[in-house]
Length: 159
Image (tube, helix red, strand yellow):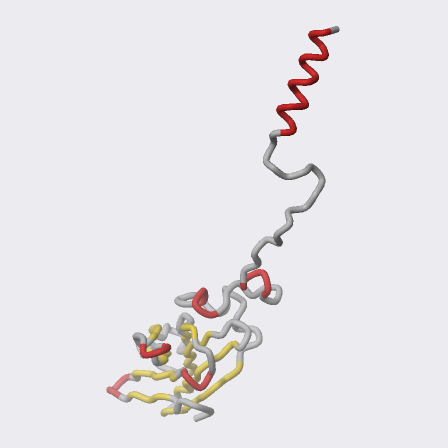
């Protein structure tokens, strides 16, 4: 009987020295929440997390708007912007295979400019990966077309 009491007492003492929290109680501080947890369903990045990401794969394309556009020859060039993702990308349609599309924006607070480029495939359409921007007006899309023609959207609005 004495041995049994000794074992029971040891178990209670070991259990009392656990991890410092009382069983069944929640921690007194709430866990940190990330920006990703606050995004709408299907959206997988925002801001800097979208750098270099595919806008369709990351769920940013669904609610994007055309922030600026220009037509040169048959090619239609546009800046696409997602307010939810705080990111922009360039898209071109009706271009020739091999043409190049680029999205660019000045760096924040005097930092280095950001840009992404893509080459047009056989279907004549292409879009770039994303760059983070705090406003659609900060992004410009440019296309380098066959024959040396270069066209850019006007920054700051529809072009």
